[in-house]
Image (tube, rainbow, N blue to C red; front, side, top):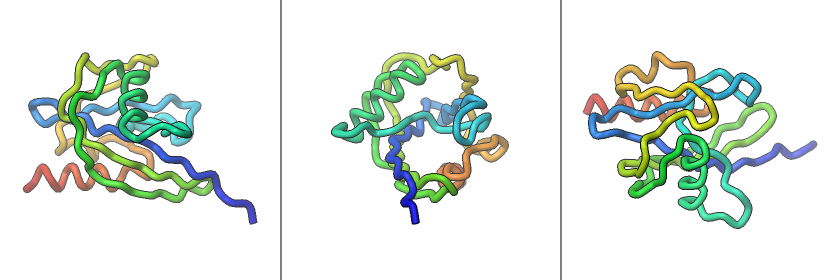
Length: 135
């Protein structure tokens, strides 16, 4: 049996001073396309996690990470690949995030995150963010 491709992904849950969360829409031609996501991307071979997070957020949405803390890790088994998400809460950054690749973006109050269609692997992130909001 062929082994599934394993992908390690650095994900940023970017929060502003109001507690809103920044999300971006995946392009239609990508895996889980046309869904909203927390920005981030693959950790390259030989790259450490925080370097990857900073690089991906710079490439995708034009910000540089100044302060972040571990939020959660999760593994998701898609039919064609196994994804390990290393999720960090980004609380300080330089620059103003925007859709650098032409993607739609939004600042969303935590309570409204479940109104957006996310990739299956992002469900636990949305649930935890909304549970924190209720505490």
